[in-house]
Every structure is written in C-alpha cells, then in structure tokens.
Length: 220
Image (cartoon, rainbow, N blue to C red):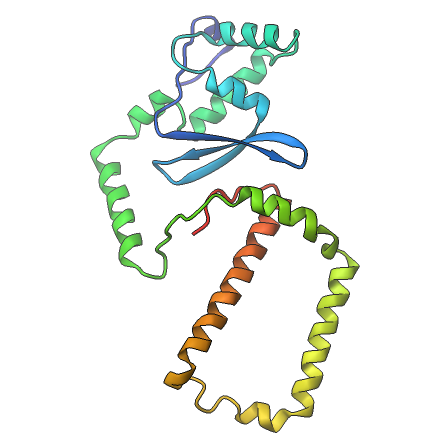
C-alpha cells in the first residue's frame, strides 16, 4: 500500500486492533506510549501524533482529520506531507488495519506460536508483567541525573578504591573465603543478594533507557 498526496482526500485509514495507548508526562512534555499487544512492541510518539493516530478510525478521511485538528489547534496542524510520513510510519510498523490483515497468514501464525512456546519453555526468558515503570523511571531520572557527571564518577571511583584496599589488606582471607560458599546454609543469602543485584541492575537499565528517551513499558 503506497500513499500519495492525492489519496488523502479520500483515504480513510484505520488503526488495527490490539493497540493500547498510554499518555504520560515526561520531562514536562506530554507523550504517548503505544503498546502493540500482538507483537509485544512499544513505540513512543508525541502528543500531537497521538491525537492524529487516534482519529484514524476508518470513518474519516485524512483531509477531514487534518481540518479538524487545525480548527481545534487554532490553525496549527500537520501538513499533508507530514500526515503522509506518519501514515507511512504506521504502515512500516504494521499498525494499520490493512497491514494487520496481510500479516495473518497461516505461516506467520505458526511462527508466532513457536516463538511464544519457546519463550515460555525457557525459564531464563520467561517474563511476567508486573507493572508499568515509566513514571517511576522518569522520577528516578530527575533524582539520579546529577550522578552522571564527575560527581558520580568520583563516588564510583571512591567505592572501587575502598573495596580494592580492603581486599588487598585481607587478601589471604579473601582468597580462602569462597570455600563452602555454595553450602546449603548460604542459599538464602545468595538468593537475597542475587535479587538485590537484579533489582539494582534493572533500575539502572530503566534509568538509562529513560534518559535516552527509550520506552520501558513493562516491569516483570
């Protein structure tokens, strides 16, 4: 499906089913996270693009949508070329209904089923969604952003040097301290330490994703 400017007068595109929209505040700006539940993909768009996308219900032409957005925005709206680019972006990411119809062949259904089964049969890759952490990571970014400069580097360097000094002073004890570390009476401590490190790691990943303007729409 190739779009052209001439088609905008009669084209009535429609978003495919299975899309979940979540409007959020990030850095003082309203954005929208689009979740494609069929493919487990996420997209972040501006609030203006969100208003345009939500109007694609199959009953209005693109020209009608642009005219209404211009009225609601006091004359400020997208141009026809910008609307064409947004439609092509939706098409390339299979978010339009016509693209959804094309992607429902038996072969693709089987391929998705095999991928889903392989994921659930592998305990190391199973993910159980628990929450949507975008707001938490946005708050965390405002608190932790100062640590990305020299202050954070100096704190990290101080911790590393202090740890190295302690190990160097007590090297013999450190060297033999691993005997029996996997004994059954240490399993609970190992589990708690692993869980703590995992939480710190995931929070760090989400923090850097947020400041890089990436989407972390699921936590689990």
